[in-house]
Structures are given as structure tokens and as C-alpha cells.
Amino acid sequence: MTTTEMPHVAECTVAGCSYNHDGCHAFAITVSGHNGAADCGTFIPLSRKGGLDRVIAQVGACSRTDCTYNKDLECSAADIRVGPGEGGHAANCLTYQPT
Image 1 (cartoon, one colour):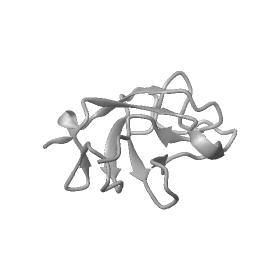
Image 2 (cartoon, rainbow, N blue to C red; image 1 turned 90 degrees about the vertical axis):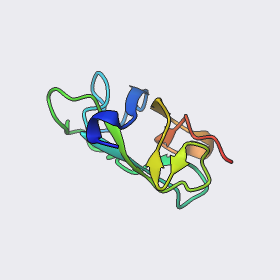
Image 3 (cartoon, rainbow, N blue to C red; image 1 turned 135 degrees about the vertical axis):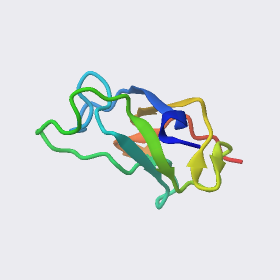
Image 4 (cartoon, rainbow, N blue to C red; image 1 turned 30 degrees about the vertical axis):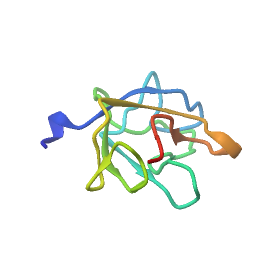
């Protein structure tokens, strides 16, 4: 798999992330899994804009080994959506499907 084949972040509805301004501007995001949710580990709650001017964000890594789309710590979904999750989590991978 090359970087051009990585799943894209098709949508991000997280209002308080430095990388989200008219879409995700991080080169790649990390989906983490240390608290029972599929959190966007790249979420940064700052008022300063971050990321690249022109980019189609993609999934760089996923540590949710219990996700249907996780194959050898890489995401195999066609694309993903990021948004506020359950329990007050600021940014979650909404495409996450437990196995």
C-alpha cells in the first residue's frame, strides 16, 4: 500500500480542532484507542489553524486492532468520517466498526 492508497478523511465535523478548517488539513491522522473509543489522536484543540494549505487528509495509522477495517494496524476502509463521539469525546473515527 502506498500513501496514495491510504483511506481519506472524507468528512470532519469537529469544530474545535486546529486542523479542521473547511475540512481536515492534517497530512495524515492517527486513530488511537486507549479509552474505549476510536479517537482521532491528531485532534488538537487550539485556536491557531494548523496543517497544510492544500491537502486531502488520510489515515496514517490506526491502533484500534478490534476494528473491522484494521488490517495490520492500517485502515482498509475506502474513507473515514471524523466527528464528535459518544461520552463527550471531542473527535472520533465514526467509521469504526468493532469486530
